[in-house]
Length: 473
Ligand code: FAD
Ligand code: MLT
Ligand code: ZN
Image 1 (spheres, rainbow, N blue to C red):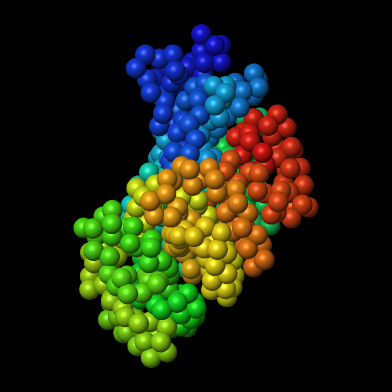
Image 2 (tube, helix red, strand yellow):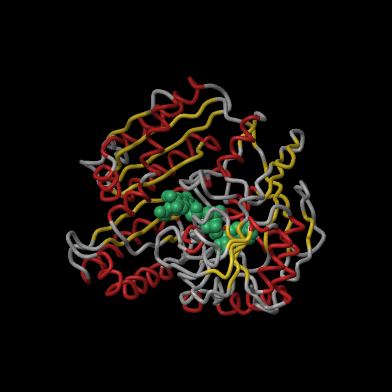
């Protein structure tokens, strides 16, 4: 047996080191990315149970020059958490490290291990009487380590920020297998370079996050959800401005959904009963979290929607009567990703541009795409409150998805990303770079920024052992 495997088994226990040589073991769940774009082959999947085990595994891998791919829930959308196909990389699966270590109610913080599933973290906060606001469709299986690794966004960013803004401290194992204990719950600490923020969003290329101290918030007294039909993207942006004014910090969600995206939910999940989408190009989902009471929240919403109807930026709207209706509306929104996966592969983009420029971006880019690919269908939706669109390009009706990707992916990416640059945006708003966009970064990122990123990588991981080939290639 490979001597590294023997060492890893002695460090983590035989049952926590899985290889292709083990009879009856199927490693696909760790080797295949969520969108089924890539299937790698791991040397081994290692599942450490403690920070000291992670440190020992990294030391053992570093000693023999073996690359490590950190993995949480494997829900990433840019092929960042699966091994390459060489059979030489170790997948470091963090899911056994899932404990809630401490809650500090006075400091409004919770300290959890990196493999804690986001939904379990939300529940632990809830049980203690607090809100942990990070929320995304994959929350039942993604981990806080993966959320930090990708600096995930989700549906509450308009009020609470990305994962980065929710994090106060980290515990990290570096590429040399040393443990950095930065698990402070401090809101102020100006003692030099911000290593925490360097690690967040580094997609497993600079260190392995083993635990984190995250912010907690008071639970809102009431939460109301509305679903509005809007006649255009300009109208959606106008509604966003009105919502900011009317709700202030109560505006905790503002999602836009295109008609075709909703028609896919309607087609694949008819039981979900998508409202108002048939007669309008766009729908908007808004959430109002109120610190007073439900009557106050409802009155605020009604005033907002009346103004919006008067100004013509909303043509029709429904306000959820109760929490279960609100969950139903959010479930429709969160089902778009699955519905488009059911429909077949598409060319996915996760872009951000200033909110003010989104209407022009969509109009121009839709026209450019339609001219090149007659009949192309746009699965557009996203976090309009954050200027973040999932601007996905689906093959014309009846066309083969695989062939469409083969023939058009490069051209469509260039067209869309050039447009993003024209509008001063980013080619990855929240999903990260992973492997999927690695070749695009040199084309669309400031060269000085890229050189500085390379210098950081070289300084922290000179052997290029942590998730090689991702982010910087
Ligand atoms: P993985 O997929 O396992 O890993 C992702 C990256 O993080 C990899 O590069 C990996 O190496 C690295 N990593 C994982 N754990 C660690 C660690 N402990 N230390 C260092 N690096 C680590 N993303 C959004 O931003 N917003 C959304 O709204 C959103 N919605 C989604 C909805 C669905 C249905 C799906 C399938 C995905 C969605 N995503 C979204 C993408 C994905 O869920 C997030 O990127 C999530 O943060 C990944 O967490 P994970 O635990 O699954 O990480
Ligand atoms: C979302 O907002 O639902 C996610 O980012 C997932 C996706 O883009 O499909
Ligand atoms: Zn998203």
